Image 1 (cartoon, rainbow, N blue to C red):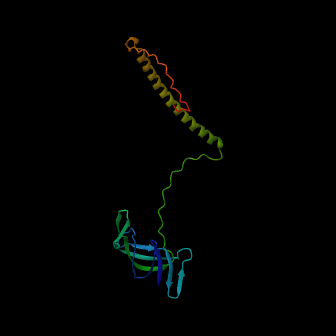
Image 2 (cartoon, rainbow, N blue to C red):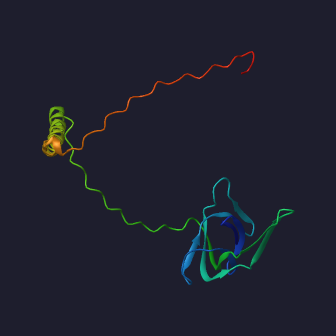
Image 3 (cartoon, rainbow, N blue to C red):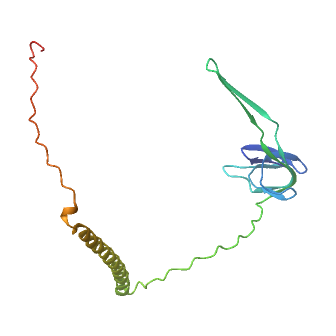
Length: 199
């Protein structure tokens, strides 16, 4: 029995006991992984091919090791521009040992239920008057809070005005005498240019 599975943009033909290198899977060494994107499964005379969606099959494999691929050097340059750049790349890989190829999807483990949020108190739909009264009450509280804030700001402003009035009430003799404004000279107009002479 063999299967063709897809993982990380690549397709692999695997049978039980094969070792393959796939893109890095973030699991510990020795753990068992189930690969479910099986495109084809063959068993001698019978073959199931995926038509639009993966075949109802799964491949079970054991993680043997995490490796790195061979080093690749990438050199780019632009002629006559003095541009040279060298890059290196090593892919992160995981080595898998294929244990079993099975028909049918692997059973998913049940997930723990997420804790529910506390429901907000709801007003019954049958009593629209109570709902309207609750809305008006919240609006009244908001308006009262704004009024207290405005009163506090008004008190601070009144104190500032009183302080400013006390500062200006000092005797005028202590203030320096303002200089008398010098009379402005009349502005003489510039002579206009004659369009014919250009003078």
